[in-house]
Every structure is written in structure tokens, then in C-alpha cells.
Amino acid sequence: MVGVAVALGGAELSIALAAGQLCLLVVPVVAMRLAKRRPMAIGIARPHGLHLVGAALVGVSAWYINVRIVSLLEVPRDIVAFERAIDDWPLAITLLTIALLPALCEEVVFRGVLLRGLATRFHAPMALALSALVFSAYHMNLVQLIPTFTLGVVFGVIALRAASAVPTMFAHLLNNGIAILVSRNDLPWLASRDGSGWMDRHPTLSLVGAGALTTTGIAIALLGPRAPLPESRT
Image 1 (cartoon, rainbow, N blue to C red):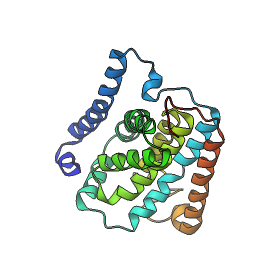
Image 2: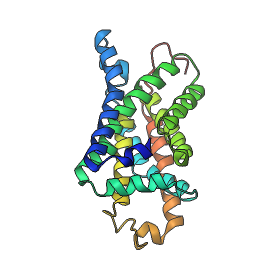
Image 3: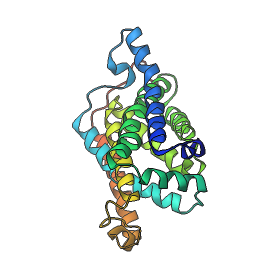
């Protein structure tokens, strides 16, 4: 999929990515409307403040853990070419197609619909594992299989606790958005291509800090009130 995307031009690639994300959203939204269900049926529900705070902490830290995991692997050439291609886009277009739309569309599908449905049929660990597996497989990227799976589990824990995909939309947006800014070298004081950023100079401390923030975020989200899913076995 990435190889096909890279073969497209800049405008065509951004349109294709945006269209792909919006197509994800069409089925659940149309089904909700036809069934005359409330937005809560697809995970759109007002969360507690603690769920949002916890999700925010995960969003601003988990990206670095994922970067460190991926750095241990050999990144395929088509992935490198894809990253270079989007570097040339205007920042607003990149954030829209790689951060905002995935945060909205993927969270509705994978946390708002899929995880919610699985949680009414299986116990929480099984529902989390299955939804995270589908989430990672959807990205069709072997290099990011492990970090995407673990991120899917973490997002799932928060979404189940809140009975809402809204907190994980926030976390997803922050995760992708910061990763994009770092990849484009737009935050050189934090992480830079020439290795002069603070995180580049303090990799161990950065990893420990990111892990601590992610763990704290999960804990804070779990402190929020538990909103039960209908007919849930969790």
C-alpha cells in the first residue's frame, strides 16, 4: 500500500490518503443514521476529564517509545520514500491527512465500533488484543507491527474505561502530530536530524521519561469513572 502511495504525486497522494480515511468513517456513520442510533453507538460520547488528561499524557509520550522500537529495525525503502514524500507537503496538509483524519476516522472504527462490539462478546483482554491486532494489520507495515499493536492496546484500555473514543482521538492526534513535527525537523530543540535536540543528547532519560508519562497517563485515565458498555462482559 505504501509503495502504491509513493508512486502517486504529492497532491494525488494526499487526496488518496484523505479519501481512504474518510471511507473508513462512512460505513459506521451511515449504519448509525439508518439504525437511528445516537453517536454513542460509534463511540462518540462525552468523556470524564481524567480520561482526557490521561489520554493527553499518552499522546505526548508514546510516539517516542514507538520511534525507539522502530529504530531497532531495518526500515524498508518504500517507507523511507513515503516519509520523504510527505516532508515536501505543506504542514497543514500533512497534519490533516496523517494526524487529524486518522485520529477521527480510525478511532471511530477501531475503538468506537470494533472494540466496543468485541467488548460485548468477549472479556476485556481478548477484546483489547483482537482490536489491537486488527488495528496493526490495517496499517500493513511490518516494521510498525509491534508499536502499532501496543498503541492499539493502550488506546483500547482508555476507550473501554471511558466508553468513548473521544479521549483516544485526542491521544492519536497528539501522537501522530508530534511524530510528524519531529520527522519534518520542525522541533529541532526537542529532536533534530543532526542529533542536536535534547532527546537526541539524552536518549536514555528521554525513554525513561516517555515510559513514565505513558504509564502515568494510563493510570490517570483508569482513575476516571468507569462507564459500562451495554451487555459488556468486562
